[in-house]
Length: 157
Image 1 (cartoon, rainbow, N blue to C red):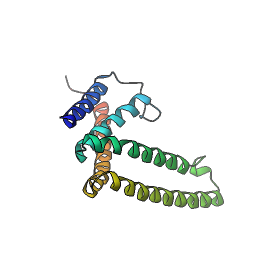
Image 2 (cartoon, helix red, strand yellow):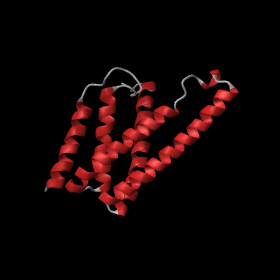
Image 3 (cartoon, rainbow, N blue to C red):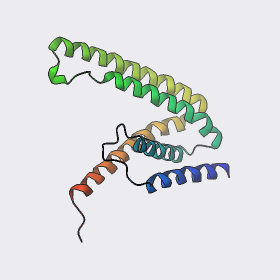
């Protein structure tokens, strides 16, 4: 009963987000409404794919969100300060070395959080999480492509 209520609540949130008028034009980056909408969609998708119980959900989401925030911070560090075309060979080499170190940190982070997830969820659900994250990204990319195509090809009357 509680699980059904939780899933219903998440579906209502996603539906409400879809009913909102579109925000200002942009690519979604630095657009708080779009980021919230995507996050709501991610929560609904992963909750459904993993079939999380209320107790699992309560323990899982804070840890998952913490991991995502740390990943986001690492990816921000990977962005160069200036365009690649403006980098000297020495600066480009140093940037590559830094990116390799950051990728190592990201891998260590994923390993750490996989172990933390195994304490919260069964191993099968942890594997499903990895699959669900990739599937969610693919669906999101496909949706963006479809929207672009619709904008490029106006509907027939």
